[in-house]
Image (cartoon, rainbow, N blue to C red):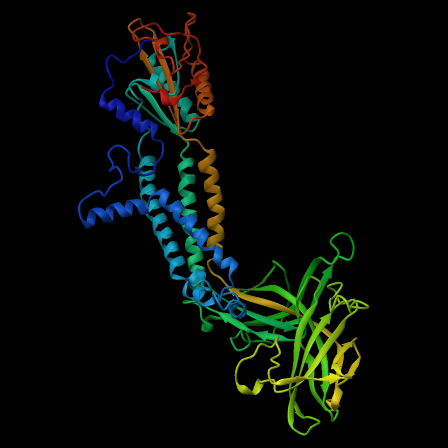
Length: 592
C-alpha cells in the first residue's frame, strides 16, 4: 500500500477530520474551535445577555435545574399541602406552632405553586426550549446534507483496512456504493470515493428524549393550570351530584373553577371488602369495590350500573372518580327523656389502623330540654371495633380484624353546648368539649360497650342510645386533570428516546479505490464511530469481505491490517500488504 499523503496536513484536511470526529448535531459548546471560551460574547448588555442565554441553554445548566427541581419537590412530599388536604395542614400547624409561621413565609404548604418552585420550573422549561430548537434545526440540516466526504488520508481513521486488486477502480467504488446502500447507509459517490453514514436514530432518540421531557413539563404545567379535584364521602344508600354544594371539599385552578364541573352523579348502592383470613398476610386487603349507579348530565332517572375499584376509576366526561378510602358508619338511635327520637342514622367513623379500629363522634344538637329543665345538647365520643376482643382492659379499644366479624361500639357521653349554633365551622369528626360536661355513672365516667341491637340507658335521665348496626362508607376523589395524557406520553417517549440514544451508534464508513502507477487498484476502507466500539470494526470487516467478492485481493502475501498505533508499518511510498483485512480498531487518541 502507498500512502497518498505527500506533505503535512492541510487546513482542509484538519477541518474534514475534525468534522468527522464530531458526529452529533448538538450545537457547539463553549471552548470548541470557533466559539468563545466561556466569557461574554460581546461588550455591554447585549454581550452579557448572549452569554447568559448560552449558559441557560447548555446541557450542564439544564441538568442542574432538573436536579434542583427534584430537590424542590421533596418538601411537598414531607409537609402537608393545602392543595391536597387543607384540614391536615391546619392540624400540622397546630402541632408545630413554632415553625409554622416560617413555613408559611417560605410557602412550604403550597410548594408546587410557590414562587421559587415555579421559577425553577420556568427556567428549566426555557432551557429545554432553547436547547431543542437549535439542535433540531441543525439536525435537519445534517439530514438534508450529503455524508461528509472522505478525508484525504484514511489511514488516520481509528478503523482502517486496505488491499490491492486488479479490478477497475470505478467498478470497485460502484460496488461499494451498492453494498453500503443495501446496508441502509446514506451514501454518496464523489471524488473517486464513497462516503456513507448511518445511525441517525441516535440523534433522533436524543432529540426525542428532550422533546419528551419538554412535553412532560408542559403536561404538568397544563395540569396545574387547568385541573381540579374534589372529595366526597358516601354511606351505602346515599347519592351525590357533582356540584360544589354537595362536594365535601373542592380545589380548582386558574382555568378550572366551580363553573367547569362536569354534570353527572351517582349513588352508592353497596360496598364490598374482602380480606385475607389465613397465612402470613392475614388481614391484608384483597378487594375493595364500590357498586354504584350513575347518570350523565342532569337527568338522574337514567341510571347506569357500574363499579369503582382501587386503580380502576370511573370515567365520566372529562372527570375520573377514584375510590380512595372506606370505613364503617355505626347506625345509632338516640332518644331523650320523653322517649322521643332526637337522632337516628349512620355516622361515619374514621379508621385509625390496619384493622379498621375507627373513631368518631355523634352530635345531638336537637336534643331539646334536659332533665334539669334547660335546653341542652348531647355529644358522644366513640370507637367502632369491627372485630372486638373479648377483653380489652389492658389493650384498650382495638379491633382484631378489619372485617366486621364481631362488631362493637364503645361510647362515652357528654352534655352541654356543642357550639353548633355559633355559626363557626366545626370538624364533624371531633367533639369540642370546652362547654360540655362528661356524664358520670356510679362515680366513674359513663361508658358503654354495645353490640348490634343493644341499648344504653344514659345516666341522670338523659334518655337512651341504641346501637342498631352498621353500614359501610366509601370516599371518592373526583379529579379533572387534562395534562395527564400528555405527561404519560412524554414519559414513555422519553424512555424510548433514551434507549435510542444509548444503544444506536452513529458511524461513518468511507471506501476509496484508486488506480496506482503499477496498474493495480488500491482499495481503502475506513470507519469512524460516535464512540469507541467493537461494532464499527466488525461492520467494516464484514463490508471488506463482501466487497472483495467484487474486488478480490491479490495473493502476494502482503499484510493489509492497519493499526493506528503503528504508522511505521506502512511508510510513505512503501509496499502495502494485499491479504484480506480483518479491520482492527485503534486508539482514537493516537490520531496525528
